[in-house]
Length: 511
Image (cartoon, rainbow, N blue to C red; front, side, top):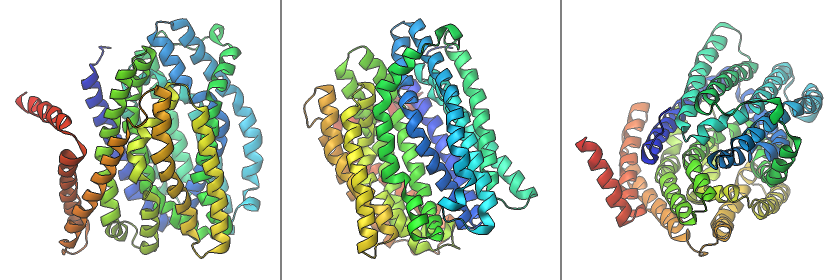
């Protein structure tokens, strides 16, 4: 296939990523209220809980898979095709080899789930089926992981987005089919997810054959020494994943066991939109990962820093608009989206969960530094300490205050803000051996811009006197979004960046 230029690749990848995000958000938008009304908020809460439990298993597998893309890409761009094939084949076979171990541990746990969790008696059978299908989906994902590297190597991430769109639309069709023709059962969500993930695997296998035909699974390329090398490099990512589980992944488990299954369901609804925003942020940041890896492989630190700054501005330009809309207009959204739920509680939890975006919306890009430079140890240990602190603080607050579910949802967000504001920028600079405050001007500019935008949006809200319905809400969000773009253009971007953007827009218009 013909190679894309850097700017063209970024534009195409960005458009495809946004389409994927909108489709995924649309599915959540329409199906969440339908599912909570059909199977109940308690049953729906177990979907998120099951996915969180799977994240516990990924602690074991992330050491191998998280760095595989980096190693394969660097070897490939350095012309070492044999070594790239060795990493590819070794990772795939190692993932297949670990499946029996996962099944041996997970199956007994699922069969005895009612002894470990607060599951209503009438939901026991369907919840166990759901957990089994979520487990099978993880196994398919484990096999497919290494096939995702083809679009990364060639910087054709838009093809992955196309695969995601196809599977998302398939998910809509299958969900409508099952819930429309059969009695409601939360297990259908797991069945549909398995089918869609398998289709995604087939598409990514095709992309691998099309984009990098010289990368193939061959027995002669399987070397367990390569697996050991990858695990050694990626073990700190496993520590990081453990940190994420302790900080965020235990929220629903703690709520289910120590508070109630009902509040777990409400919290899972509140987490829906922030989860999609986090996905969007990571998707936008990942658009820059191929170039960052390539520049670092060529030992071009100046280009790496330039690409990081562009990534920070690019992701934050969109994230703070969504953040401000949800904080200022989020209650209206919840009233329209899930009117049969406790809107005030869900909106309050939404605001608490969204707090971390005040900093992470711009600093998340810097996490790429630790992977690209293979300096994961200190970062992982730092967040592990923070995570244990989070769990300790949550239990202290649950036993000594009346904060309840707000303590579960909010503690990790506060510590996350501090970590992303202080540690991440400083250590990223240390890894790149550049001046310690290189990224702080962008960070503080983003925070200041976000507060200005919130004031502007609050002013728009004061003028929002029309009846609350989807049409008026959409119109107000469009107006606010346009105002947010103007604020970002004049406040977030500097003079040079504004000139570059203006020139590129004018060039497109003239065409």
